[in-house]
Length: 191
Figure 1 (cartoon, rainbow, N blue to C red):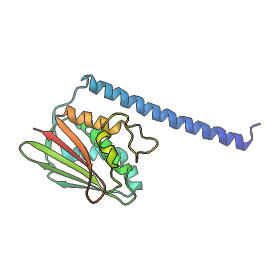
Figure 2: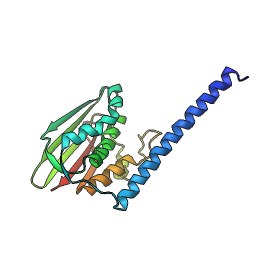
Figure 3: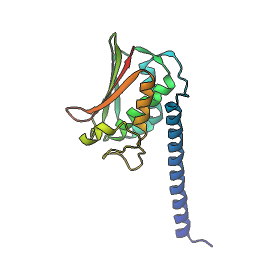
Figure 4: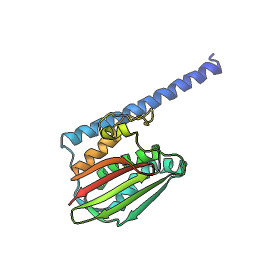
């Protein structure tokens, strides 16, 4: 008969294995997605979508994390519309917003500003978190790069995937630190 100590160790071991399997499944799915995007085998829908709808869809999967950390998200400016694929773009914005949420203390704030002009539509996502380590900024969109402030569970694929999706929508993304602390992502979609 198994004693409660060894049964507890077995359950803990099974729990750790399940977590590792989940991480591998996420990594595998992400790598397959990146490969499809690289090979141009992904078909993007061309539909008129609203930036607010993209953001709403992007934050939905991380609402529990946003709620636990009591983070406020503000959408500022002209919501505007854009021609693209809402599902893919929401994946890109999810990865960027999730990065901000993960690197913020409780009771933080994310401001998402939307502006447009005849040449491009611009979305700026900025937070009041810890920002980037200066040396990491040139590399944060490189695949598998893990910045000095990244969590131990990070695999370094979310921001590169976001960049690739945005570029496939005739856009560009860059990152910098805010003067008063926190991170800023600047996304431009060209007409």
